[in-house]
Image 1 (cartoon, rainbow, N blue to C red):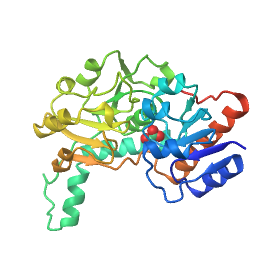
Image 2 (cartoon, rainbow, N blue to C red):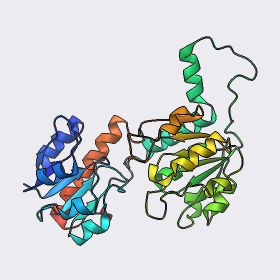
Image 3 (cartoon, rainbow, N blue to C red):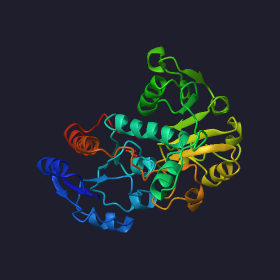
Length: 317
Ligand code: GLV
């Protein structure tokens, strides 16, 4: 049986499956392993089942034992892994697409609603007490008739677009390529971000974190939006230059932000904490029991498929 290091604790159903599929090393205390600990613990292993909290950079990958043939990431995103470094070392990298699209899209919609309808301020007032209903109390932005820009129209973006459309939003999107009419579902394609942002009353960031998308929301691009736009991010923190967004929020160029992901998680930029119109969540995108089990099971199946066939449909490098 293949020996696999599993860097984070999984839900019991998935750990049971792992025990039946290979010889796993579990992290029973769910300790956050340092990079050197991952290197040490992977000695004698055939593969590693990582999570998005493991920074598998070039140096870490170069120090892994030669016996490691696969890094199976327990996430759809794989910005935590240097794909080229892995490829050079002959290590396959896999991810867990599809199974988390619905759960993540739900959080994407929550971010839009929470930011537009001032949920953070509302929750705080309800808890503080003493609030008084009035005709203009905590007035927010209505979604019906509002334009939603979707940055990255993959599976999660498409699902957010479908739900948003059912709420009466008018959908625009930018993607590396234009989608088929069926997948577009009435949305308008923009072949560049300037054009998309200029019609986005609300933006939903759903694209992967890559070198091209890093800091795509920045000092310059934030000016492309209509005044009072709302920016939400359910993808990865690396796509947003925090200082630029915080400054735009403080100037009210951007009306509100809805964020589930951050650079340097869990240490988000403290500037966000001072902004009342920031609706912030602690990376909950895929956090439902069924989804987390499906993701872990797929990460396990990816390893199994790779060792049985020499390849894997979810290989990303
Ligand atoms: C979650 O953020 C994932 O990429 O799976």
